[in-house]
Length: 344
Image (cartoon, rainbow, N blue to C red):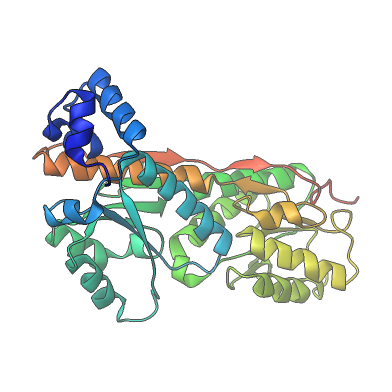
């Protein structure tokens, strides 16, 4: 027969309620007692009954809500959230949704109403939706948002803030320091307006601070995809004069730019320097490897899950007066082989 919670309690020499508190990660149990209980759980190979916990009114699922074409980003986020859920005794529901489809609000309302979801982790563009946040607040649904911004941003509620502006400024300044003046910017999708907008603002600010007038013809809108990067770069390389450097809004776009340069027989980096953003596998698997901004997606996601779980437990214990948790990240430049000083 499978071991029960009472078997664990007997082996650990505690009450079964104490075992339940330990399994549910309640902070009221001392470290020594927790160690005894976990040792007994491991010795008996006890598996908590998730269904029973749900029936007792304590939903144990976090839901990761996203709409992002970048599979590497999604996988890294999932990995970080899953690691924290495993450590904290929660399960994860992974839920892609179409932010362009007007029916997504009803879809998420249905997801929330099933009773199993304890809280939501929201990434752009859902984390930027005022309507969705108001709906969650009205229903007292715990959530944490991953957003583009800095710690000074006026963003209510628990959130992780990624300083895209500062990272984009540093990448552009680096290209300027290499002697580049005609630096093109390949923007991201309009569905992710804030991220793309903050990266573009950083690009403009770095040029302005270097007394370089931004050229409208070098700022090209598009999608966060390889093909979009390739098509836009082909067009840019047909201009006279062509840019000597390209700053792409993510590594997938930058990889597309690299491909287009090769087709056009433009040497990278000798004739064209290319920089990306995020430090995804695209940046490391391309040739030459891409200069980029390292964005620790797994770490960001794990911290988002931790903040959400702390908020859920605090709410269950009636502690609702705490200020919402906030954490900031600034992606850092990783210099690789795709950039070099501008040709004289």
